Length: 301
Image (cartoon, rainbow, N blue to C red; front, side):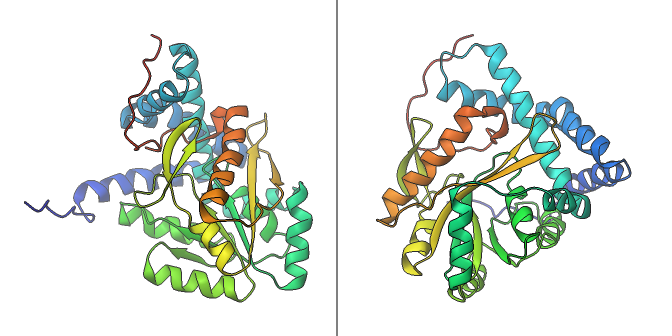
């Protein structure tokens, strides 16, 4: 029997969007530092517990770190929610956030490779995850004159999606929705020697069976496939939040060598995993990343 179609324009989605809009408007009335701290605290203390995000993060942490004591999992889960809230309001604070990122100098071996590719007119696929603030790296590079497009997964709440897409576009460079229409524009931008950003750390049902954080996952190979098809550099890059909670460092790692989609995608997973293990508080443990059927280890109480 066919399942009823989800009503994306439901009253519930409309009300949820109004609450989020109200929180954003309230926060934007505050000075930059205060607003980032305010939304981080509101997400950590109110939104994440009520929405079940904290519990999901703790479950995922227990899956990866079964010997981690519950208080430590709780601490990380709360910090994850705080980082998510900060990221949200930073991305709505376009003028101030981009001005701050303009003062950040990207580092790492991938930066020289990107500059050379730009000079040669060679396309570049930049890959990151929901780590730190995933827009920080793009903002820092756009501030240096690079036109960097992005591919995004439309959100289930269409009311929220409408204004969030406008926010992503304000960072500079075109953004394209996943799907046939968006992919066409995405590919044209790449073929013209453009630069694109992809986030590859969400479950993809039709993706390749890979590993992440020591467990099997399904990962889209689209970033590697595009790099191989259009002879593009494939560069992992990250915007890592500093200890003050407001500043970032941006690092571009060495390009992933061309081989095959599976191998290159696993290399991207390994790159992100190293970042997450070093700073677990900055990755979005709220995602349902591990949908490959395995029996999760029993966590310590």
